[in-house]
Image (cartoon, rainbow, N blue to C red; front, side, top):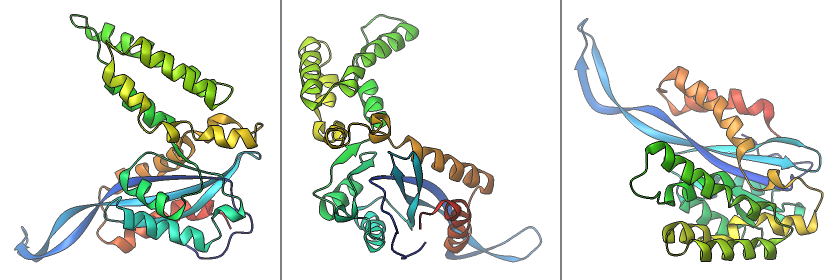
Length: 258
C-alpha cells in the first residue's frame, strides 16, 4: 500500500487474514454455447493479510498495511511484517503488543521478526477452542449439552479479569485441578500457549489505564474484515489479482495510517 514512514507508531498491532476466490487461467480452452473459444479457469483460494494499528489511550485506530498471498505461510506473513518495519513499526518506536489468531505461519514470522514484543492470542479464538474441547455429560439433550459448555466456559472469565498474571495463574490451576478427571482435554487446551493467552497482562503492568478488552482480541480488525467479506460475497470471485487488490485498496486505503 505504501512505504512512507509513520509519523506516529501505534502501540497495539492486530494481524489477521481473510480468504477470497481468484479465477486463474489454465492452458485449456472450451467452446461456449455461442461457439466462442473460452479459456478454462480454475478457482484458487487467496488470502489478504491485514495489519491494524490501535492507540488504546486515545481509542483511535487505522490500517497499517495489507498483502495478497496464496497462503498464511511464514514467508507470506514476513512479507507483510517487513513492509510494516519499513514504515517504522518496531519496538524502539513504541510497539507494545501484537495480537493474532494463533496461525502457525504467523507465529513463526512473529517469533523471527518480533521476538521481544509480547504476542497475545486472541481471546475469542482461545475461548472457541476451549468450547470445542469441552466434553458434555453423556445422555443429555443437545440443549443441555450446550448449556453445560456455556456454564463451564463462563468459569474462564475471571482469568481475564484478574488483577495480574499471577492471580490469573492461580485461577487457571484451580480450574484445571477441579476438572482434571472429567475434562482433561479442556484443561490441556487452557494450559496450552498460556504465555500468549495472558500476554496482555505484561502491557497492563506498564499501562494500567489502557482498556484491557482492547488488548486481548482482534475484534476491531474483524469489523474491518466484515467489510471485505461483504465486498467479496458480492463479487463472488475475482478474475485477476490486480482487480482483487484494487477492490481491497478501495476499502482499506481510506483508513490507512500515515
